[in-house]
Image (tube, rainbow, N blue to C red; front, top):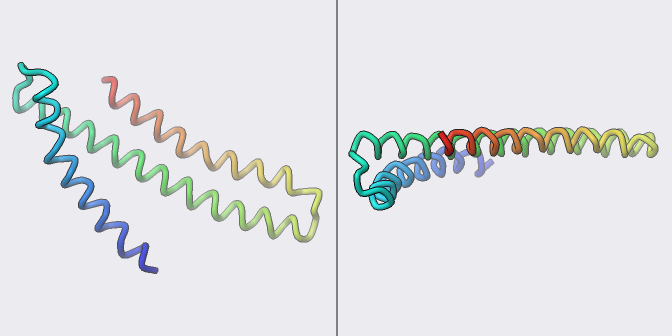
Length: 108
């Protein structure tokens, strides 16, 4: 219950931190970087953080639900555990796709 109240606070704090830190880092990395270009770089890092955060949370939720269902099914029919845990692996793909999208945002 406390995690549901803490998640929006952590998200807001991380967005504030990313918005304030990364324009300065981008400006140090490239001296001819103007302020508008630094804001674009900052927006890219914010988008990356949001994408990875949302997809990781969704993957964790999906794995939790699938794993509970897999164990419940395995308690009745033990031979089904291999097939049902396959779906937990498929749910992990959500997080991998989020990392892929974040990487694509980073290289553009």
